Length: 117
Image 1 (cartoon, rainbow, N blue to C red):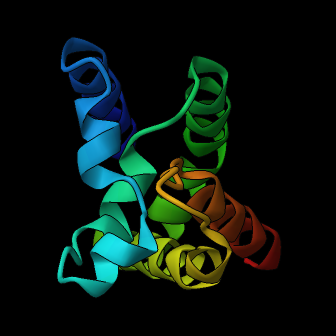
Image 2 (cartoon, rainbow, N blue to C red):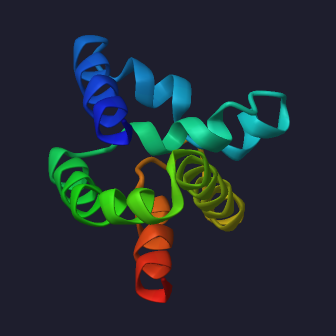
């Protein structure tokens, strides 16, 4: 499910010539002006293809196992919590209008969960 969302977002971003990066990227100024969807949306788009491929590969290996053990509802909740935690850590470090993008923070949270479980 998450891999499908990443693939669809990558295609749409390519089709829209970076439009999703501009619309979903984590930019503090816009978040503080009410664009709260950016707190989760930034994880769907990536700056470069290698970042998307690396995240997708790790998700493919690790996410299946966590979802099998925890069930879909708990797994999706974990993904949301990991993404929000990444946003809270990344917001103070975002400088200017360059958006923070990528699912790497969520993937790291999933890797830590996999090691713990």
